[in-house]
Length: 475
Length: 96
Image (cartoon, rainbow over the protein chains, first blue to last red):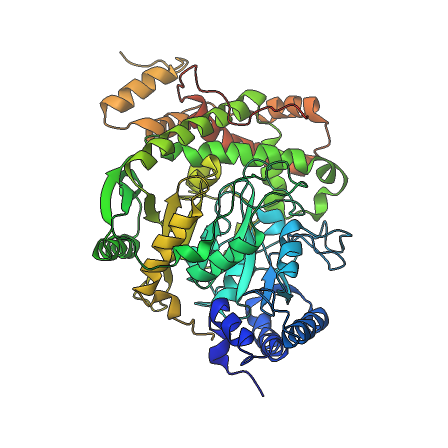
């Protein structure tokens, strides 16, 4: 029996409950998503690779196992698609680039391996900005398009993940975030994105952008689903020296809806300049809602927050230029022009610039440690602008545009999380008046390894609002 | 005192003036950076030889514009005065 479209918009948690109760067939569920991908991908360009045959095989296996009473857990039989920068054994992994367009890894990333162990079904690989830092327009596979308005950018670099979730082409995804690449698309596409603490999730098999800033984490349509995904992928990994041994709590216990007594810090300087009025209004309304739910809102300060992006950009590009050194020598013509421009420019950075930027990280970590003596989570807007139109290819090919601001403003409110390694969750908190109505996001920062509290606050807010239930016009 | 055409403006003096005008922190450094003299293509070509000399003319032209723009940004970080006790974030750990 065909699966109704409404079921495709259910959270993975709800779908999992139906599968466990044998009211929903994993095979029929994946077939429904594959049909929807066929229908919507020509317009959204969210998928680079669709693994239909593999997905049907995995779904059939899940159905057989569950039928025999071997239920693995809430992700068993649930389709997902990672950003195409996670290595999948035997499945093409392009990194969104012509440089690696035909690469088929002979190994599996730890994240996709753990999701396979949990019984999740691989539906395909999702579009991205080249090597997680390109223009998203010129690079290998063309731009993914925002389902709220196909003329606009879904942000990046996990562009396909944001699009596929908003358009209900899959219920779960994995993105990566080096300066905001999970949280940007979550903000622009009206979905949930978590950049967890550095070290909480293994980076093994995730193509590097910058070793000390990279994170790979859940992108979902609800906070509860982000908690489910993190539960499945978190924990130490001998294949990643940066993965942490810290115990992984039971995140489902955070989903109580009760945030009475929690303190929400608001750094006033984030709101000082350049915020669009509709974003500021939505953010302030979200703070009112958090107060209504029983939280206390307090002022906090991160005195050097405005340096996070400048210093972060130096670290990111210096590490990226080092990582791609050989490819830049042998096949520079295959790179997206803006990637090549950024990496070439980074080769002129000095060692003292890089180390100074690393000292700024220490400063920011100390300042955030002080912040978290005064509050339990820190709230900032998900971004400082609404999704702009996709740039024409000629404009997207370079950062040096007439009148453009320098890199301090690239990354906005997000680079702070990568520079400190602290977890940050973005979730929808409103829409612009439009037309077109465009999503607005709320971002919550937490203490190191305290994703639990982020889930607690995010879920309570989500339960009290309806923003996450809205569907884009393409749906 | 009028500034002579060949007079080099001390960056810290500019920052002090901007601070007096109400522009502080990175915003002031940003403004001061815009007054920074440019890097010539010839200088950059010389620097590129220290790398590996693999840039062709077109690529060098793009890099020149990008480096010029990024220098303004790097200057923001360079101008930040840090306490001596602040060490770089990555920690060296010997393999066991």
